[in-house]
Amino acid sequence: MVRPRRFTWLDALIAACAAGGLTASTLYHAQLRTSTYAASDFKTLYASVWCFVHRMDAYSVANLKQVFVANNVEQPATWWGHAPVYPWPTLAVLSPFAGIGLVPAAYLLTILSGVLMAVAITGLMRYAADYFDLGPFWRILIAPLCTIGPLFAFGMGMANVSVATCAFCFMAFVLRNSGTPWSRGVSLWLPGTALALAFLLKPHLAVWVGIAMLLLPERASRAVVIRCAAVVGGFTAATAAFLAATGTLGLQTHSYLAMLAEETSTGASMNATSREVLPVASQITSLQSILGFWIGNPTVRVSLSCAALLGLGFLVLRQTRRVDSERGAMLAVSAWCTLGMLATYHRAHDAVLLLLVVPWVVDRIRRAPQAWPAWAVVVLYGAMSLSAQFPDVERWVAGLPTYSLAGFLLLRQVGLADLLLLLVLLIAMTKERAHVRSQAMAVAEAHDDLHAAA
Image (cartoon, rainbow, N blue to C red; front, side, top):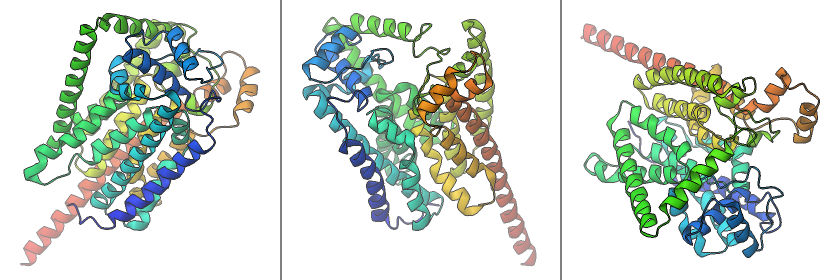
């Protein structure tokens, strides 16, 4: 039962301080014109959006270079790994940014990402108060736990749209049961639209939240996903119609597919067998990448990856269909997001999405500090963002044989941590269900005793 919404102002204040502090520190020393790191992801995306709006090939590196030059912004030392990888519906939803210069747009996106995450963290804190009965002290822990991780800071520093995408996903989940029964149909459009915006910004990240909510054994979640599909479908159709009317639909679609083929080819940075030495916050997380360290044959690698993912997906699906509590729902959605990090191409900073599980972690530690699953989640998420100093890792890897266990652990650290995290979440879902069942049995026995005494 949802409790009265007490201390909402405190949750909002703490969330704003946490997200605002990170946003301010990100922008304080940012040299957006001269630094090749600051907002580097958004710079490429902005250039692609600008070309899209002006009916030019949005996936041509030559065109992107012209946008960088026109905005007097330093280009990457090499365009390897800096390809425009977002589909044209994403470019369409971000098209208003093309009305201002690249540098102001980067500032604006970073600030908007911080504001959205502050709203999302407030939502997580209120959700924890309403459904987990967390008091102010325990809820306050949620905000710093969401913002202190290097992955969040890295996503903000690169101005990657994953931060805003994750914020919209959090909103979609925590708002799915909002509103009174008579207004539920109208109020579900808010989380539905939030999920749709997440999907349009970064579809391969948000889709796993949609899948999880669709499979939860509750009507409200399915209704949110249906509304999300309606918004995404309508926007994509309208964009396609506009592109067709301007004669650029074929150009943008063909260029996008050609760019993807090139970026995933052998030797490219998005290829599953890539041995590019990266800071841990930029490592690839997919299961294909884990297997690609050892298996070069694409047929064997894809076959084994699909078989393993189908097996893991079946386990998650079975647990999802058995969800019988709000804690179980949060674990189920988090498990699907973790599986999604393994199933599709992701960089480690996309794991900000996994912060959805933080309220459960805080609640579990409060209720049973001696239990290991919550602590294991903390350690494994930390392993996805922390490592030795990057120069040290580069030096260690340089002296290792091509196939070595040490090299495998160093270059696939994030993916391995994500895989282990998924297994821990599956165990936690089993334990949570058993706990709910034991509570129900205890209540039933107490009721029987009272009935017998009467």
